[in-house]
Image 1 (cartoon, rainbow, N blue to C red):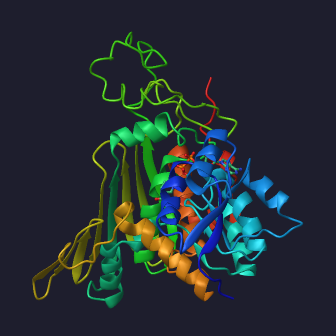
Image 2: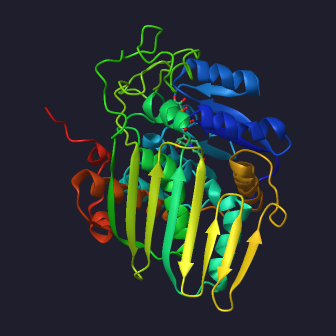
Image 3: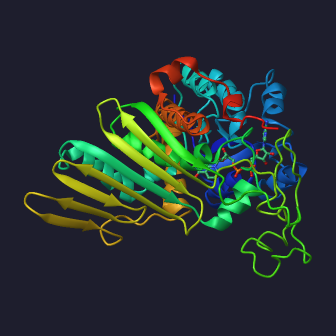
Length: 416
Ligand SMILES: NC(=O)c1ccc[n+]([C@@H]2O[C@H](COP(=O)([O-])OP(=O)(O)OC[C@H]3O[C@@H](n4cnc5c(N)ncnc54)[C@H](O)[C@@H]3O)[C@@H](O)[C@H]2O)c1
């Protein structure tokens, strides 16, 4: 059954991403209101109070939120789980069990087991649900999906995709920020489950059969000549691209065993971060189609997608699409002149997905997001790729889906 506007939500995990998403509530209080926030970090709870007022109740964890509201009913219309990825299943499943509409951030989980737990809870309680694979909401990728579904490309034979991340983001988030430890996430899962989901979307639901992957941390190896923290005494102090970027920011706690992670003045090389700085995947799908995807951790935030079929190729970025047909030879371009412009972050994808979720909550229907099952498939392929890279072997996805290794499988083996 649908709900009335404004939709009252609880946000579990109020870090940078949650604050960005919650801006929608600040700008559209007639549609969305944040009435509860849970976060273990006191400064994040204070930030929530500053943004949403004293009437917004705060809790130290998502678990405490559910526990405190057990007897008197939860008092919200929906839940947003925007905590770190290893906690998603713990915080999403109770929402589903209570039949509450849900946004649960990508990656859906950090193990196939946890991703399937969310899927099973959803199958028992199919509430309006969004996994914010925001690329699916971009006008350009929707156009690509439309082209693929129309059949004009003929038989799809290969998909090629690249994500080239700004190196400052690589260092800020994955070498000295919340994404630095594999016990929480991997770079591929955190950043590229989006791209792997898009490839799966373009494959029209045909699943991956086998995955190979190569990569590692080959630039950011520890450097004995550099100190652990940025300072004027560092020999790279004047030329280092990463010095001072976050240096002025107030350091926050670095703690591998708790969930608060990050310190802005950690040396990019000596931070103890466990992530790769480049990785390439090769995927074979069950119908024989192949795909390759490369995560580049240096660059300027470009993304590209190329889908090659027997009759044509489509080239796409988050803003432009070019369709090349072979017989007769023809090129058609779709740029900002032909694609709708959407306001907001991630090319407008974030606000589009929030609006879509609100509409689904009001109507009691479903969203046009990736389903949990589709998002779980992106998790499975990313985990398959990690294991392929770590163990230098081909991963058969049917075996992996059956074995469902836990998150510990993603930790590097300890070498002494
Ligand atoms: N869809 C996108 O484009 C997109 C973009 C950025 C981040 N994300 C995802 O959003 C999530 C959060 O990312 P972030 O950058 O904000 O990370 P973050 O570390 O800044 O924020 C996560 C917050 O969750 C809190 N937390 C941890 N355990 C908790 C618990 N048990 N209960 C309640 N809160 C808890 C932490 O204290 C932290 O404040 C991640 O899954 C990330 O991958 C998605």
